[in-house]
Image (cartoon, rainbow, N blue to C red; front, side, top):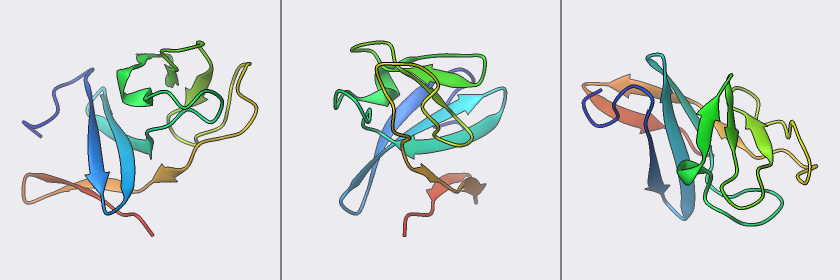
Length: 94
């Protein structure tokens, strides 16, 4: 997992989708890289307590479920299965 160090995030393009990938304590999480409130890049947000904060207005999203945890966001963001295969990050996008 050399591509994504502990505590870091990256933006990945999978087809037409932008995905935010986070490495939290060695576990990968993948979310749609667009806040459901203000269209800001979640991959640029701060991560703490299992959630990412939107860098624009601070709305927080659960890294496991994509659920909006605080205002101003009220809608969740999509989550995607992510794993390491042959040393590469693999994201499954329908």
